[in-house]
Length: 281
Image (cartoon, rainbow, N blue to C red):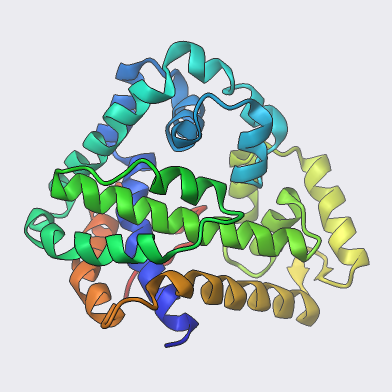
């Protein structure tokens, strides 16, 4: 079993998870529980498993966002909606969205949930704050909610490992965004604006990566591409550890792929997207 297995599973788990950011059911649930605006909804909903943490914890674990973008939402989010109240609605809303955009997922969820649960149970939480917080929420009784929660835990497991590798490569959050855009993974202007960085800060990061020989202009050099490829390869390798307990991970991929495609085709999740996940062929 090699890292390509983990990447393929990410490509199906990520769209299933990502309805929480884009679907009207989830955006509406954030608003109804008291969160104000898209970014407070995003940081509050994704960060709720950590508890009512200060902004610095969100900056550190989410990576890539300008501190002011985070601090405009946190800790104010916890005054409008407690983490407990957010957690009561976010999985319910995500499951409702999945049943709408991916009909039939309720029939497959009872088969997928035990497999995903085994992977989550086998994954190491050391150094992975977002994964460990989601894992410790437990598994809902309703199968589609359970599928969404387990997919979320596994995507955060992968993301936590990715952040560790970026940090180890000497890339801060802004530089990681610049490097990703330099290889065409994400549109540079869109990621700069969404993550809250100024043009001046972006240009400073470009200059820093240029001095390291990783960029020429705003395009990656051979060394820059090699570094990005190595980080992705090692991210896959770290994520793979969770799936080694499965006898047939490709079977899980085949089980979930039609529903990930349905999410993509629904229009709720944009392509290209700032997450960097591609469409399934």
